[in-house]
Length: 81
Image 1: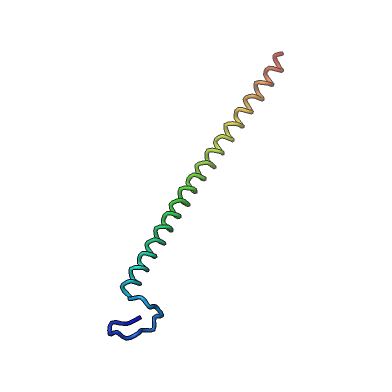
Image 2: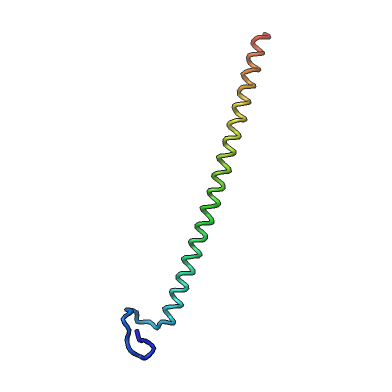
């Protein structure tokens, strides 16, 4: 590649710096966009997981309570009959 004075420089690139700069800028922007999207998805999945775990715990409590009520009902029915 040529420097500003028309002499070859030692960067190893053959394209002009202005084209390389634009290419690297687009590459960086694309990478940042992909990274931000992935972070957003991870955060949404973490929130969903936290919600589902909380919901599961609530449902397990409810099932346990209903099983206890059923047991009491069966015991009461056996005592009466």
